[in-house]
Picture 1 (spheres, rainbow, N blue to C red):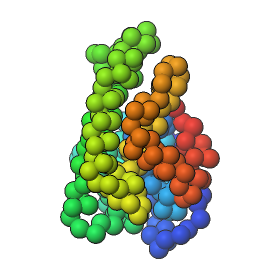
Picture 2 (cartoon, helix red, strand yellow):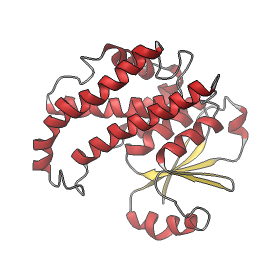
Picture 3 (cartoon, rainbow, N blue to C red):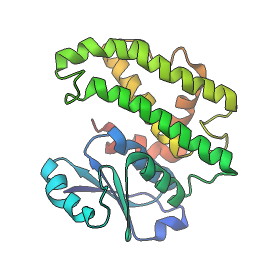
Picture 4 (cartoon, helix red, strand yellow):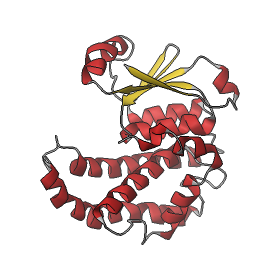
Length: 237
């Protein structure tokens, strides 16, 4: 395994515990939100980035299967606890890192709903960028399918999130005070689409969604994430 460790100043009592292990492929993908959360919380962790599939399928996965039969990437190992599946990992980190403090069940379930909506957007993108899907199998097919994704599917998802923010009247997707776990994945998906559009010479997908644009800019400017945006993790494929 290729392991990289985030060396970040300890700011919370959570950081004094034994380090958590966070595992995902050596790309941003579904790993970026978790890595951002560790950086935001100022918690040191072991960032395991798998670059050789056999390192995951042949070594670490069989080990973790003994503890969690549903194990997949991403995952978190926290002492004797092993958590897997994207939204569960983010909710677990939100709790353990002190990010997901909710004033009531309304905020708790608002966060869960945003996580699910953002994952729907992520799945739509996977049909365009991952070659093992039936929709896009080659680079040439990507150039054919990407414009329709940017012009139809992305605005449909963004419109839901824009209306959600208008209804809630908050700076972030759940509350004003600070981001919750859902915000980290939401930002990542917005940023991936900004990058895709820029490389295609297409307009920013956020141009028609002022509330999402403001959220994106606010999130990227968070001082507690400056270390992440300056790190190699942010420049992964």
